[in-house]
Each structure stands twice: as C-alpha cells, then as structure tokens.
Length: 327
Image (cartoon, rainbow, N blue to C red; front, side, top):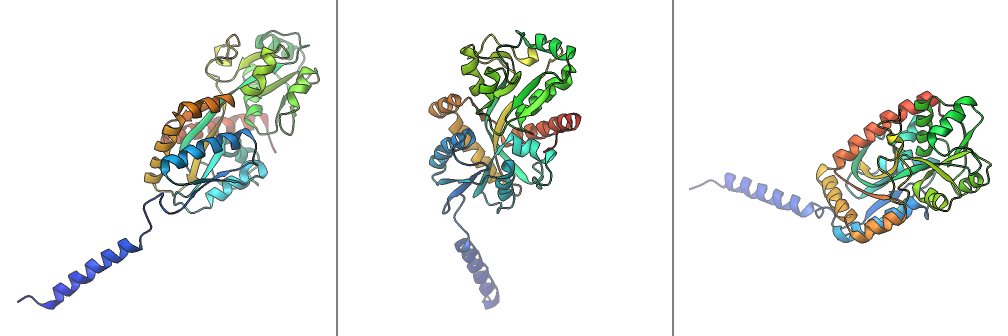
C-alpha cells in the first residue's frame, strides 16, 4: 500500500503549478495598452508618421497603442523615459536620428543614456533623403561649381540648417570634410524660415529634407546641387546623388526614425512587434501617406536596425569630432 507522503508531495507540486499559472498575467500584449513615446511635441512630421503607424499596429496587435508626446532637450527627455521604463513590451519610443545617434555626441549632459546599450532596436519606421539647395543668385549650376567657389573664398559662403547637431548639419559637414572646403553654418530654430531666406539670397545654401526642397526646386526658386541618399529622387530625376560625384563615392546620409524598447525587453516581444511593424509598413495606404510626408517606409529586422544605428553612431562621432560640433 503506497504511503501518503509521496501523494501529498505530488498534490502540493500540482497545486503550486496551478497557482503560478493562475497568478501569471495574460500573454503579451493582452490586458494593457502599449505606450509609444514620441520625444517631440504633437503636430510635426515625426508625430504624424508615428500616429499613422501606431493606429495600424494597434489593429494588428488587437491592443490599443497610445501615443505619449514627451518633448524637451532635443528628444533626450522622451527617450530617457523609455530607457527607464519597465522592459515588459508596454513602453516603446520613436527614436529619430538626432536623439539616438547624434545627441549624446554633442550634448552628453542632456543625453545621459547610452543608445547602443540602453535601448533594444525594434524596427525602422522610415527614412528620408536630404537635398542641398543654393540661392537663386549664386553663380553655380552644380555642386562642383560650388566647391570651386568655396575653395577660392574660404568662409565667405554660408549654409543653413534647422539647428546644431541635426543630421542636416552633419550631412553638410561631411561634404565639407570630404571636399576640403570651409562654409559657415547658420543654424535656425526650426526650418520654416530657411527656404524663405535662401530664396531671398540672405543665405547661400541650405540642407533641407526632401519634402521641403522639392516644391522650391521644381518651382525654380532654388537650385538643387545634390541628393544625400543613395538613389535619385523620383521628383528630382535630374539631380544627382552625391555618391555619383567624383571624390564622393559611397557618400550616403538620410534622416531616419526607428522604434526602440527598453534594453531588457524580451526578444520574443521585440520580434512580435517587428513582425507586425513590417506588415503595417507594407500596407499600400500607409506607404502612400508616409511618402506624402517625404518619408520612405522602413522595415527590416531588429538586428538590421541595431547594426545600422551602430554604424551611424560611429560615423557621426567622426564627423562631430572633426567639425568640433557642440551644443
């Protein structure tokens, strides 16, 4: 006749298993909304693109995705909030290039987190090329023409961007370093006034995102000297990429935005979000609306985004150090 002790122990083990299963929370993403932090105020292109994708992402996950705008310090405050959030898949952050791969290099006091260690890449949301444009009165028809002018008069010419430490500035600084020219940076607080001042011949050049540049170039108000991406723009088929030009082979820089999670977020959750994000970015309506904003839909794996960010950070570090860029 069996003793009662083994039976009692078996019963206790089964009870423990059942109790633990009962205590566990529902499988992710059940039971709670997902917060997607936008580290800028509402209304800008990053916010618009994020809301577009978040709505479709929520539909696919069958869970609400709530946008939280946490602006300040060039994106540092919003990203830091995500870094310090619980790594449970319920907090994500949209990370633009300036906040992820530039900010800490020029303002470590504000960007106290390490984007390469404190964040888990999830997936690329979108990219956007930039266009270098010249004022109508500048006697050039190509970038090569401008290089000749700039070398003949170092420091005499100027270029505008929407601020210090932006990818726009770094794109131009890389051109300057590669071409051996000195052009004075004129930083603006935002980009609304830049095109007006270049059209008015108050500034010689500007590095603009493609959506801002295309209408003025096609309207013959500005001259396009080159595109920073690896491919020509459909809207500007006659404007070469810088990578096509002599001495600039391999040059390619884009403005980009990715989605990230706190570093210790379980890989299975990251993979699920990445899978659904890629599906959303293949939706024809989503793609069309992103392209209307001048953004090229992203995609790819979380590992690919991670490798991309590392490469961007390393290259940007060299540009910042060579140009001595500081906040």
